[in-house]
Image (cartoon, rainbow, N blue to C red; front, side):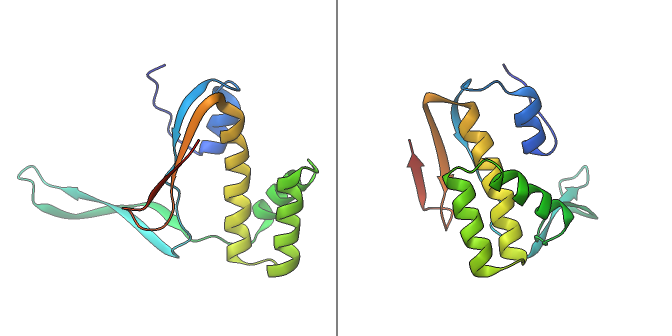
Length: 134
C-alpha cells in the first residue's frame, strides 16, 4: 500500500480503506486533555523558531456534529449503540460525551477494516502502559 493519508481518519477509513484489509492498527488517540497541541518549527541551525501552528485541539464540544454522529451510532441498534445511549442518559450532553461519540464511531470503522486475524494496539494511560488488544 505505502500510502500516507492526511485528514480526518473517519473520512479516510470510509472512503479509501477496504473492509478486512488491515493487519495492524496502532491507535494513539487524543485523550480529552482539554489542551491545544502545536507544531514547533526550527530554523536552519536547529534552534527553535518563534513560529508554531496548532497541530490539533484535544478539546471536544457537544455540538451539531456530535449530535449527528450520536444519531448515526444509535441507528445501528448494536451493542455500541446501546452503550452510547446509556452513557448519554447518564452523563448528558457535554465534552466527555462528545469525546466518547467521536471515539466510538472511529473505533467501529477501525474494527471494520481490520482483518479477522489482525491486531489493534491502543495505549491506555501513560506512555509506558501499552496494551495489545488482539
